[in-house]
Image 1 (cartoon, rainbow, N blue to C red):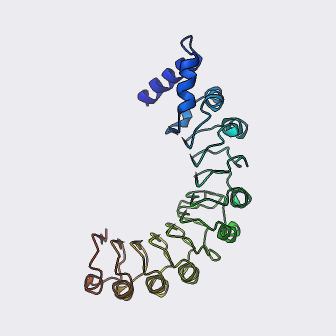
Image 2 (spheres, rainbow, N blue to C red):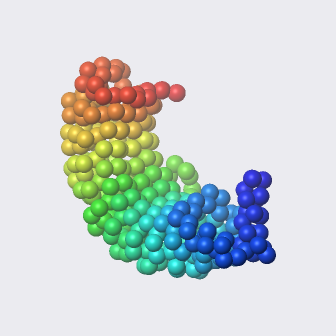
Image 3 (cartoon, rainbow, N blue to C red):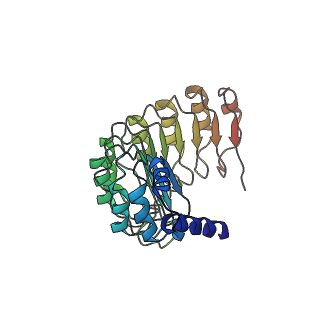
Length: 294
């Protein structure tokens, strides 16, 4: 923390001190990437100043900041070149400006005010997204999921740990993904989606034949009936995290038969598994196998 404060003090001195000149302004103008790992130490005045100087940013990341929507809009007003935006733990952000026409990668993780309507606006405004993360967003539900199908280039979708808005329990997850269908998808993280069931996962598998990475860790309703379909419909699968699900050797047999390129498998806490030979006999490219029962 002291290191962050020293860095913040240095930045404040640079931005507002007597040494600030045209040369320093030029350095900020040349910035392409600005990762702010602890936005809590930044004042809104500093964010405004950065917005007026860092005009050519293509990558911006802000973590754990109480930045207001108004100042956030001012920060992004001139960053028309932005291609990647990552917000994590920014509780007062509820919308993104339409001016970010080049945006292809977007993370809105643990942002309390990002709800279904906000997600729908994202889809409408940024149709070229290839990566979208809504992990831990407490206010989104299944209502926004059908709209994600309009993102025709989306390859990586992360919906892990999407909590109910009531925050009653960290184990009370809302998404069931019943209507999720994205043919371009290669990576899906639905970890911790307690209501994700077998029919929903089967729909996802049937409509995402290019899927290479799937995480259904702690999806307690998932068992062989859906993951065997995943194995058959997604032969390009490279990584599967099925920890804390109810799979058995039946899933391993299908993986060994259909997913010959599988490289990583996580089946921690899958107490129905009694033996691994059905998997090891077929998946010759496997390099990571995690089977802890603790």
